[in-house]
Amino acid sequence: MSAVVTERVAAARASVRGTRRTRQRREVVVSAVLVVLVAAAFVGSVLYGTRTVSLGEVVEALGGGGTRATYYLVVELRLPRALTGLLVGLCFGLAGALFQTLLRNPLASPDVIGISAGASAAAVVASVAFGLSGAAMSLSALGGALLAATLIYLLAWRNGVSGQRLVLVGIGVAAALTSVVSHMMTRSSAVVAQEARIWLAGSLNGRTWEHVGPLLAAVVLLFPLTVAAARSLGTLQLGDEAASALGTRVERSRVALIGCAVALTGAATAAAGPVGFVAFVSGPIARRLLGREAPALLPSALIGALIVLVSDQVAQHALGSNQFPVGMVTSIIGAPYLLWLLTRANRKGRGG
Image (cartoon, rainbow, N blue to C red):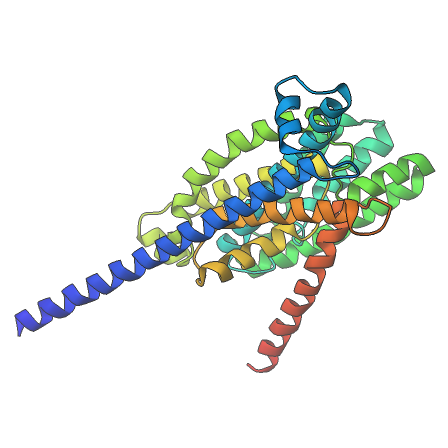
């Protein structure tokens, strides 16, 4: 009898190991394909435009050779814009996956629960009321995201934080912050209001190396911290009681993960404005590609980068002679998904 039990246990363990290896292989393959696609989109962003340049001309420009016009086009205009789009997409994609996985709610992305609204409100107040711009405005956006996240977390706290309560509180805070933005816009001059409106749409227009530097530093700092904090993400998905029983410091781990996600959102918003729905859709797409509901942090970040880079190309060249903010294109992608998600949730609610 014991031999039969031993064989069954061994078979079960072998099955689990096989399933785990299959999932790991699939994640590696999906991530590798996404890296290739992101690299292709990035190179395309540098090569293609109103004047198409060859890969050889890009290499010459990066080495200091070629014509002055090519150097300016590649190094001063396209490369910083493409790098900003790449880093912004990585940050938004990773932040959205963290929020949705941690709070176990598909609506829990920074542009829905008020984090991006906090960054936007702080940036608009800094611009309109104090005349700040550039790095000072970016720092204001980062501070606004952190303050909004702190307020939402405190208001949602009831002997712990549930995903549904935090989402509802975040939506309410986002509505209040949006009214602040609207009020400040009505008080500003037409020129300032127009500049703020473009930034609020989420735009990569005019991105320079001054935008790339702080954002790159934030990514280099925050990505390793996020990877370290995400070690507890699997146990947190089991629920607070189960995670605590397994030795996880629940609140400490949750605050660390939320802090990383908020900082990523603030850094990306400071660089390019609140590019809508990138954080919202990246995680669900990654999980569908992997075929499971487990955390998909790296694929989510890569999908975010791919969405931003491709959307920026569409905004520049596929919508007529005028250039549009990248956030307009990402909103066209994300808004229907949000409506579908709400409709699906409503049907499930009716169905019990």
